[in-house]
Image 1 (tube, rainbow, N blue to C red):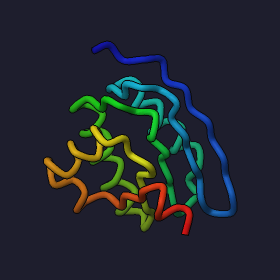
Image 2 (cartoon, one colour):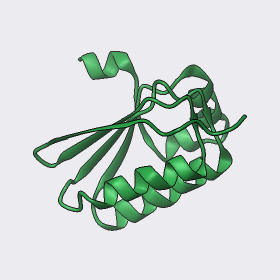
Image 3 (cartoon, one colour):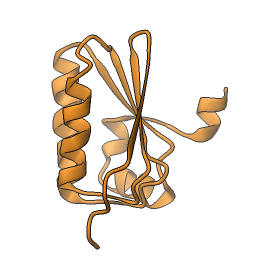
Length: 111
């Protein structure tokens, strides 16, 4: 499945940057664009990625998110994944990445 053009919305509040991905497929190029966007906000302690629209995440994108998580953690910053699609959430659980990443569901966000 080819990567879709990355559609990214950004919202910054205090020390939290929220990036909402509207693309259905997140591949290596899209993941790099996310990393590049995050690099423009070095003062933000929390990075939230809303990925509800993403139904397919390639292994390259998952690898990039793991590297990003480790880089942010070394800077005492946090990466949170918000509203994963069921397929992406199942893949994260299968790979045991739900233990690495902070993952919030829509119901957790509402509370």
